[in-house]
Length: 181
Figure 1: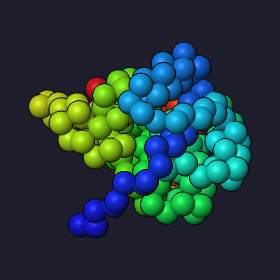
Figure 2: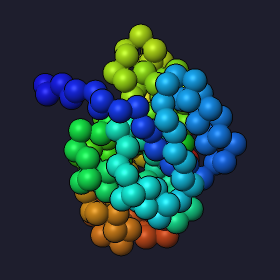
Figure 3: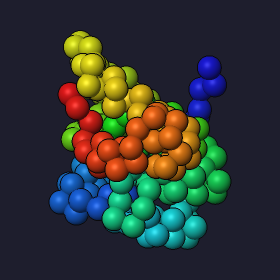
Figure 4: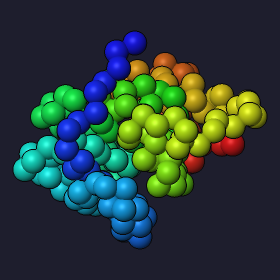
């Protein structure tokens, strides 16, 4: 396994459309020594990366104007050694795999506290939250499979529905919902 070195600067870009969460996390990361810049849209996040690519980033997956993975991709293209973490309330394995392929080092489900985010950014396994002991439900396994096929079909709803032998509107309803427990 290739172990990435830590960036020498402590610049951090936070991209999230939840303003109160963004502000709290920004303050918490500043107390941990980061120089924080914030954005609340994909466009602003990419603009911040182009202006000066940070050493670290925490990016929400679903933003008002698009997919946070676009920010991860731009960051990795500008600064390959940057350490980026994806946050989302819509977690699934397929999207996590895509995030890692685009350059993210970790993927955390919301709500994530500042200690878990800091641990993921720095690779400090003691600061990270423990994994749950309970296995996925059958509904969750089904949902994960649908999400995986959706990602493999390049997020094309019609193609995914065809491959799953499912009506397109049914698939759209499933994709719009949060992941089952």
